[in-house]
Image 1 (cartoon, rainbow, N blue to C red):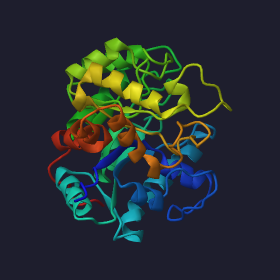
Image 2 (tube, rainbow, N blue to C red):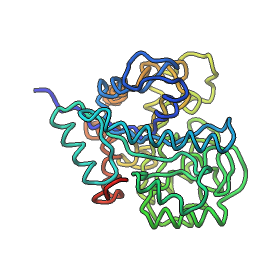
Image 3 (cartoon, rainbow, N blue to C red):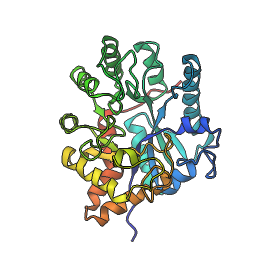
Image 4 (cartoon, one colour):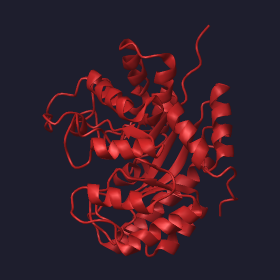
Length: 337
């Protein structure tokens, strides 16, 4: 008798950004831009849920970027209408369990939860209300830059007074704080101000690969104390500090080493997968064997080869994120406009 497929969750995918950048069709496997995430790939890999980003790259004037951000929101909200048999939005515990039930019953179904990667395009803390009504459930204050709210990984500075106000509004609405792109000062400033749920959707341990985007042991300790989950990022440059662009793919066991280090810091319930696929990633800069999102089950197979239990593997592949969302999403979502 076959064991049931794991409930796979990927906590960071830049789908709308990639679809619009390369003017491609999300429903087609063959696509420009060397797409790693398409609907057929997601269904083939058994990826049940993705945290999908609202992210407008920083190479255009602010009004253009705002237009792109809103276009991305529209793209996601239209997916359940375009693919009613295969796609659903998740913004509540009720919808999360509905998705799991459909997946367990063998349905070809993929769910998405809205996240905002960098809040620099918000006009004010109050504007987050509109995005929340559309289903936004997670937000990071910055990308790698410094903005009016806080400082990102490539800059100096900490949380601002306006940033504290934005955190207050997020807490009021029940939005989860993603700390992935904050620099250390902003990370700890925000942690002092923040009493709500937090996580790192796509970050790795700095002890194994030192750079400004990975998390120090001190940061991991705080995240463990706060019941966070960290999604392991599948970019070679954040897995191996010796890797250079154009070099060979990182061996798959290197990903397992990062996962095992995170388990040692966060416990077996604190680790997930946050691939960052289609966030500028291709098979040229991701680990061997992980050429599209359909290959995520290979991570489970690698962990099993290393002697990890079926329960731990299921947790890393998605169960830990499922439990985290079950604790922190609203029980029922209000009808979305």
